[in-house]
Length: 344
Image 1: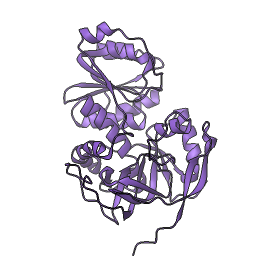
Image 2: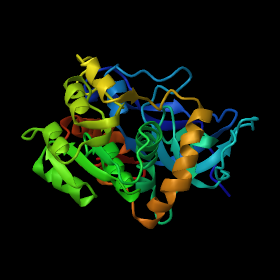
Image 3: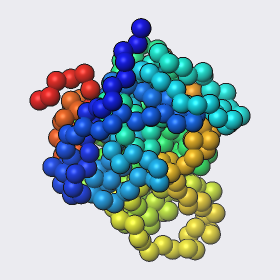
């Protein structure tokens, strides 16, 4: 018999925008699953760069989403909301029911003991996974899939350049692109990070602090697709090292939101410059990405061909420490919250 669902839960809220100290433990009402949603007892949650941006006041949650940070969780389904006609919007997804252990993409609310998620953004844990590893795969896998494979149209035999290769997004992109037959180059901020990227499948890790990534990639033949989370001053060198018909996909602007661009270069090389965000999409739109990840990436995760790289695990009350470490950018892979871990 399942445990009774309590009325309140532990959570981490953004009590004040700014430094990590603004993240505070709090008590909140347990959320209620709405139409097409499930309530998940959270065992572990991922810490991601958008959480940091939200804490700084630069990335507000979409209308109707929880103000509690956290975009991905793993845990057990403990309740279901009312059914709705578009619970399964024409895509083949596994049935999710009470008692199932699931990974879930949420629009907010992950740093808490309970979270609600649309059924169509939930998937069963890959074979052999524990909660921490399961909580560290959906946000990165979906982001990489929709940007590298859907928008970037990367195919076997093409070359992918990944900026920020040692991040959670970067380590996932390297592994997935390599698994599907692409040649991979990546940038990172230290020799140790570059070596890890190469161990994961990159042909060359480029230390952006000491090397000219555009020159190195051009000498190697150029890139068909670039996954860029930097923006700003990277725009022009990105265009320089793209091949004819190359595709630049922007997913963040850590290096700045604006840059001058030579439009002639885009026209002469027939380049595509695009980008996207995932959080604000509707459940039906997200389901179109989830179903491809389920069909094409989940078997690789279950087989161990692709795996989450977990750098460090914190208790829920250690969320502020996790944010400090993320802002230092000294980590490689994912930072996670384990709700079963005692407070430090």
